[in-house]
Amino acid sequence: MAPASALADAPAARNAKVTLVYEHALPDVPGKSLKGVLVEYGPGGYSPAHTHAKSALIYATVLEGAVRSKANDGPVRTYRVGESFTELPGDHHGVSANASDTEPSKLLAVFVVDTAETELTIPDRR
Image (cartoon, rainbow, N blue to C red; front, side, top):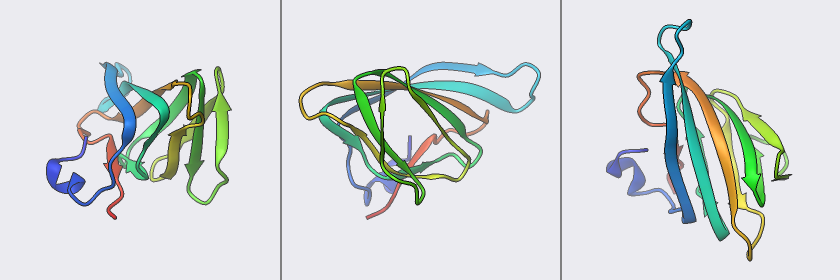
């Protein structure tokens, strides 16, 4: 997560919970790790626009409900249970939200990232 100073000017998430659930160094790739992040959105929940660690390659799979996502200048897409998407290093994640105002949603994001990276998500400033 970003330090408090970076979050002071950033818009807040709404009805969202982010939990690091897995972390393991890649044995054959020195300096790289896998980090699994569970993102849970309540009804109407969302995360603010953000980027990820500069080294991060992300593979995300929807586990429950449906998630709206937009990377860079691409369209807003809705991903449903079992569907996946990828974010490349440097991508800007403009939309990350529950597609429902009445049901929860959940996704697992698996990061391949430099082991030394401690900030996985950097919210945009206002």
